Amino acid sequence: NDTILIIGNGNSVIKNELGEYINKYNYIARINNYKIKGYEKYLGEKTDIWLNGANSKLNKRNKYPEEILVFIPSLILDAKKNEVIEHVSKRLKLNYDKFKVVPKNEIIEYENIINHNRLTTGLYAILWGLKYFNNVVIYGFDFFIDSKTHYFDSKFERFLSNYILRKGHKHDNKKEKEYVDKMILNKKIKRLEDCCFEK
Image 1 (tube, rainbow, N blue to C red):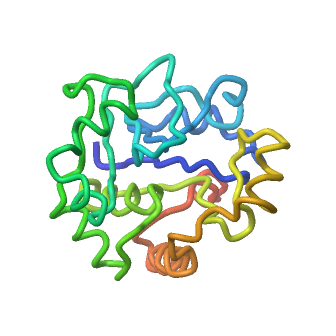
Image 2: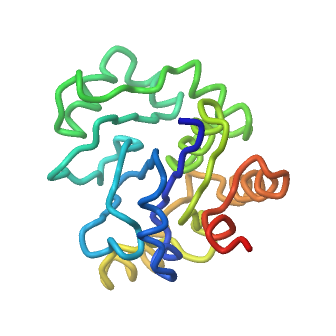
Image 3: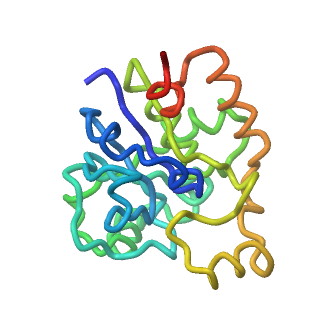
């Protein structure tokens, strides 16, 4: 396949009922704690690849897609060294043969593009998509700019994220947003909204 649709977890995904349109894509990637049940009319039903950061708040899934790719920042790879696979296996609650950790040299390649060593899982995912696919379409990447919450968060989680925890401080969200905006402008990345509402 030469096209990948990468779906983020921003609140914007439940503004439009694009589920049927999304289902038409041959290759669909979703990120971290994505949820489909109850959101099918907005997000479709198919997941070909799960892209995650093996973070501490990752939920155990009832069903896993065929392919699982894990993005870990280079500084954490350095800290964990030989324990990385075991660490990821515990976090994902999966055997070693069920997932692949993106190699450190590739992670550094992505970090050098942005000149930052702690990218969001979403941006690692986009950069990976650009490396391996001719066409990258994205949806639901809000980059903590308008909101720090996800479409599936409860009211309490939204309150915590926006007013108490102040998530996202280790990432450079402004720099990430500027990069993605530039890539959209240069037509290197397409937004799903622009694809499905094109005349």
